[in-house]
Length: 265
Image (tube, rainbow, N blue to C red):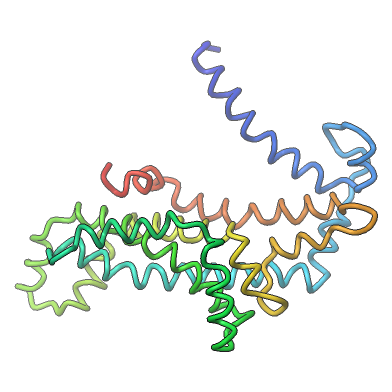
């Protein structure tokens, strides 16, 4: 084995170690976890997963999280597509400043908006709903989506638009049947970033929900008791939260590099 290939292998193993440890813990009892160090479960058990799949509080946490994350992704991409097209194809007063300002919204910490959102949604009776969390996450995801999609759209020649108009295409038909398919990689990357932010974000999701739309990350805190944490159950829940993200990454794995470069590679 060449020396230059050893370093990447060690690095990959180092990255995978926490994931392996989490999965291994999910098949252990809490007593075994606290009892000492072991690479493999000494007493293999599926009880932790059984609790998650049979207790409505647990599996509804996953359903709630997936529901508002999906809703947020759809809203963010739907709004960002025409906005990014406008920035890509037209020039207007203050366009560059507005475009940069959009990205600065992503730089603000979520804690700044938690209380305003809470009061606003309580007043409109939207508290503890999927829509409340989805719209709150749009504040961060729409600007990022616009930034990414504009990069991909900038790589599409304007002659494509002109040719479609000459051929008699209306703008909605051209945009839906020709333009969007030509930047499908960008749409996938933008959807990936929207999904990942909304999936891992906890502060707003926990603040804006109570019971009906409570996310799995908030439910995981219920494993604490006077006797300590139910570590095996917590590890099983954590293992299951990795799966949706892994599935999304699998489908957009070939375009993530372009996403980090905003489509300019």
